[in-house]
Length: 294
Image (cartoon, rainbow, N blue to C red; front, side):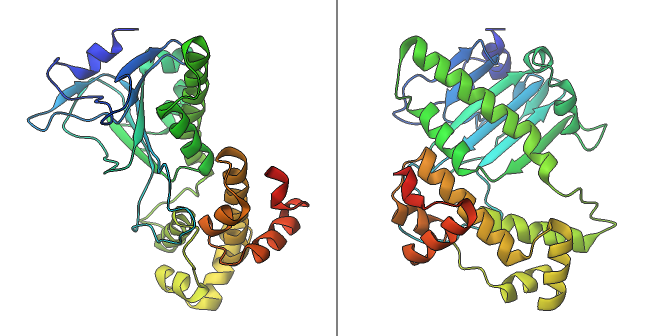
């Protein structure tokens, strides 16, 4: 299994799994969960395709300072976590790019997937039974971003560092395989409106700091304000505003726990302009103040 990296690069001169500039250790094998880990992203040489072995290739981009204290709107459709599932050895010309953001990559061969008992979850990524590859794009949660950042620059080395990398790799793999199951099953040909609602929800999830309004969300869904509220409630069990508030507070709680931000920084990162309002909403949701995590 340790020769898996040789299998995916195809040729030594191909630029696959290159490390981020100035990052330590370009690549290493993790016996558990049985995957290749790189600081950077898996990518093919610009001059031509290479061979990707059957397995799961995951890239997680993260922002090491993530605009602390600012409220910026992410580009439409921006994703931070991409999983590419490959059923059979295939020629690959490129991979999803993280741009200038730091990233980590995991490559899990099919043999490791089966040994972990995750074969069914892997096959579920292929909505088309005849497809040779499948691409899953997700918004990385604050927890997954924190995990990726810690893998990029581990706080410990040696056996402890290896154990930490293995634990974090397993967590990312589980999220990549199972996060899709939380989505609404969408058949674009049969339910265009459901697809639009899903798109609106994903836009909110991708940029919690943006000051979303019901009118803007309804226009994006092609619905009136009243119809949008009703249909969103039916689809997700909460109004759009209640859903957005819950997502913001859940994300803020993760930021406080995993990234050790201050209460003010966490509030700004999820779209609260006034920390006092944030603290009140936080206490209502969780039963205690956000300062408990300081």
